[in-house]
Image (tube, rainbow, N blue to C red; front, side, top):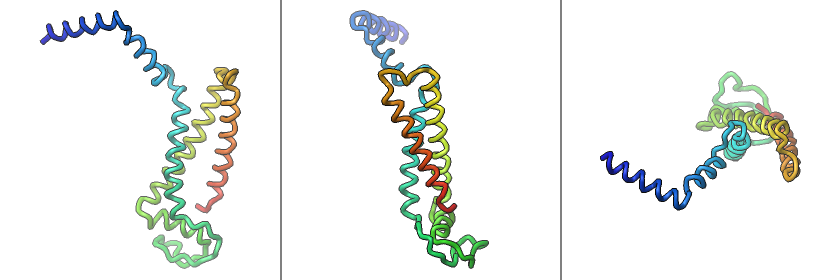
Length: 162
């Protein structure tokens, strides 16, 4: 068995000497998996944003953004009979009546926090390493705009009844 493995290793070495595939593969794998962990902050922000989109669409299906005052008759018994807005009642219904609703609300909440934290730390890394200089000035402006939009969206999300 070891003779076959040894011969296969020699054949691969000879093929690599004639067509240097390993150096090409090594350089391309370095691009896919960066050397330092801080280069993954952009991907963390991207995946958090995707989670925010998916959970936000699902929560939007159940949320009723109405300020009409109603008497709560849901499954959360401490608030039964209390006057509240229909928006607050729908948030309670999502949490207690929709299957997995509270879990999705929490996933949405924590993904929003991770999204903003990853974007801010990513911007700090870009700033302190000088990666915003030419030819990436436009990327820097887009990133700053994304942080401002994220802050505004976060304010809009926190102003919803909870």
